[in-house]
Length: 137
Image 1 (cartoon, rainbow, N blue to C red):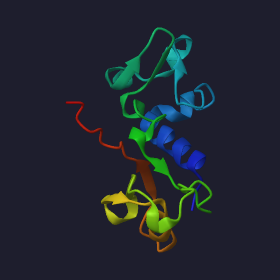
Image 2 (cartoon, rainbow, N blue to C red):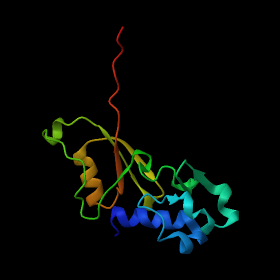
Image 3 (cartoon, rainbow, N blue to C red):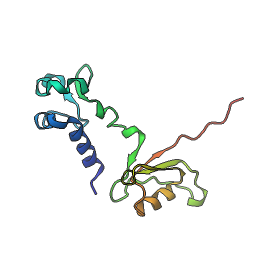
Image 4 (tube, helix red, strand yellow):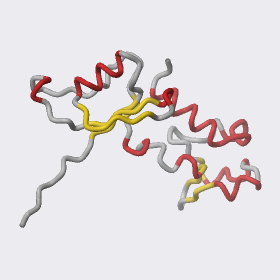
């Protein structure tokens, strides 16, 4: 299983498509290309690029940094969520999904339940959920 960084770099490579061979040594760790090197990009790709004042990157990478709020679990499980409380008393503060199982989602989970799902091969990502706020009045 690949690490988070390897998976991220593979997503960047895929998003750049055929232009990757020309830009791979010019893009930063976030997959952005300095506008100075725009001449390396195929004119057919221009419409699929998001441009800022200094960089451009494929539209597919717009959420690459945040991964849409999901945390990809490292192969060794080192970044699984940890709760300090006894597992039976934990609040259900997480969602989990498994990419290999066609994005099967599970909601309202404890950290302990996510660890069990990961160890059983049923969770590849998780994200904290927002605790609902009670009405003020």
